[in-house]
Image (cartoon, rainbow over all chains, first blue to last red; front, side, top):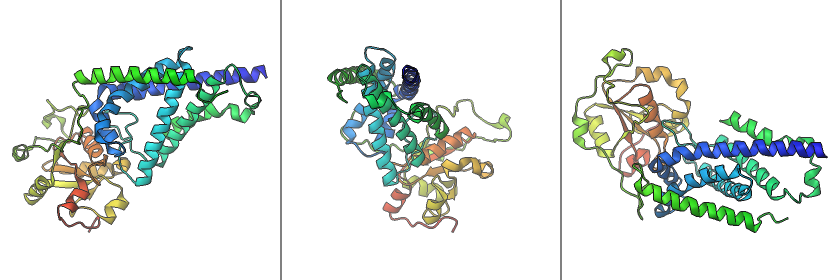
Amino acid sequence: MIARQTILDKLELIGRIFLALLFLYAGVPKILNPAKFAEDIDNYRMLPYALVPIMAAVLPYLEVIAAGSLLTKRFRNGAALAMLAMSLMFEIAIGTAVFRGLDISCGCFVGPGEINTIGITRLLTESLLLGLTIFVYYYNISDKKRPPNFQTASKTRQIFPLLFVLIFFMFN
Amino acid sequence: MKFFPLKAIYQALCMLMLATIIGIGVNYFHPKKAAFSLHRPPIKTVPDTMLAQPLPNVSIANQSETNLTDFDPLTFTPKIVDVHQVKKLLKLKQAILVDARSPAKYNHETIPDAINLPVEELYDYEEDIQKLSKKEWLICFCDDVTCDLGEMLAMELANHGFQQILYYKGGLQDWKDTGNKTTGGGQ
């Protein structure tokens, strides 16, 4: 049981560092070019235009702050919740855009000349990311009082975070 | 165990508040700021006088002939044209229309005389890119104003060394809305 718990702890740590780096990687280029990010958000045609620049100005900083806070002990739970909310939002936005057949840049990683269109592959990648954030968040809020079924998780379930990371890189 | 403990919600809201203050504050002074506006700004097109200027002397094969002194593909932003400018350039035979969408969409409907360079499969079209004219404007387009493929193609062509690139942001939808005929690709 203790050995399993140690493995889970390590996997959670790997998942948390991966998420922090990923959100940092996604946030910093958007901070450098908010105008381009605003254009990407607007192309989804999901928000009234008045909210688009606010979203473009705030979201990258939230990504970076959450990424930094996820690596601290004190603010970990809040950061994981913020990331969970953002991942869910990205999933819904990309899902509806795929459903509407839009040929747009996903705006996930803003870079010069980067081909980053949305599609089923991007939707699956975001689903994996959402799965990983749920795991990290759930693991951290249940840190002191874990449900019994979580502690006796099978070995297959224990390798989920690693699989998420692996498949994420494969799709990218 | 609560799935949303109050402490986590409180921390997340604090982060959101902090991000809002920093984000809006920094954006105000940012050189590439997202401009606050209640309504979507109109598309800014290039002045007609710019299109009348002679094309830059470009040769991909021989870099010594290439005038790249003030051209950086990494910071390149395609110049946007409207339907009237597109039609004018086509009439003067000074431009080639390049459809950035998938071959399926291109075959279904496109602007007459447009060629297809699907941006998502561009690595299969290297030979076609090399055959593109360096003496005419390349006008990239896709579905409509929300579509990004045309702009991505323009960026890719800039990375291939082309300088004379224009972006028809209105795309096929704007072409149809202004009463112009369309055709199936390759016809």
